[in-house]
Image 1 (cartoon, rainbow, N blue to C red):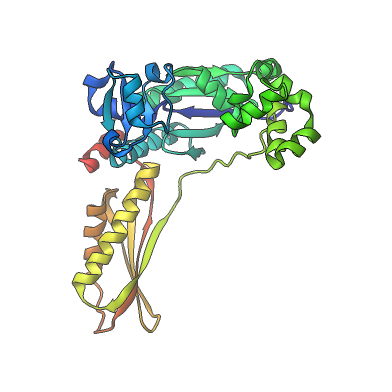
Image 2: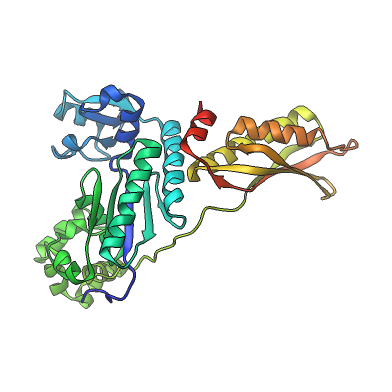
Length: 356
């Protein structure tokens, strides 16, 4: 019942407990401390991430941070810093894409990719990727390789905090049969308890229930669980290269030709584009400014940048220079836009200069 062994295996890579890793990178003194990342415990803050030792003690994501601190009073609490997390995520994406161009991004710190068919070649790819990420970001990467998408994530979890685990096609069936139902995507405590009442505590038990009964009990979700138990992931792999262009535009609430108002709009667009660039660890080599008047006529000015730019401040400065080249002739602008081209992945050293 396992999938066709001729299919290409799937790889999954992630930084385990990403927010904990980010906090530890920012403050090396936290390297060996029990760590909780989340909201203010005095204001009903929730746990966003916890160090491995705390996870083993039953502290989970979404738990009240106050409750987590009651269970582990020695733990150190760090407030979630999403700005820093997004910046590090951009570095991580850039490092991954230096080694593997086509990936499917999963959240801030996860990546799916196609893996070589040969086990040795797949593990060699994993070793190069792990080394590249450590070199560029200082973060430990764990990697799983398996014949199905969901199983690649399970294999990565089995690899621990770092390293790689590969499940070959001829051992995939045996691997599946050892898994409890809780490890399947979409099986939470309530679904697991309902399945357990029916005698399905592991994948063999889930298969024994049969597809028809699972569909009666859980509808389409039951069908998805059946496919997963049989080694088939209904969610397709969608890998892609980084975008070749990025653009943002906004319609001004009050059309205007005032340079100050147009500059404020340009800055908002640049800040939005900075976030998009960081998500993929990219810098822009070209920029264009587009201004559309009330008569729907559009004026565009563009330039090649002296050096690739990734910061909002740098993008805004370049756009301001383009704005200075436009004679509006007293015509009010109703819509402004920025377009970035020549996008490229930059090294970690360049990103540090831009960030700080």
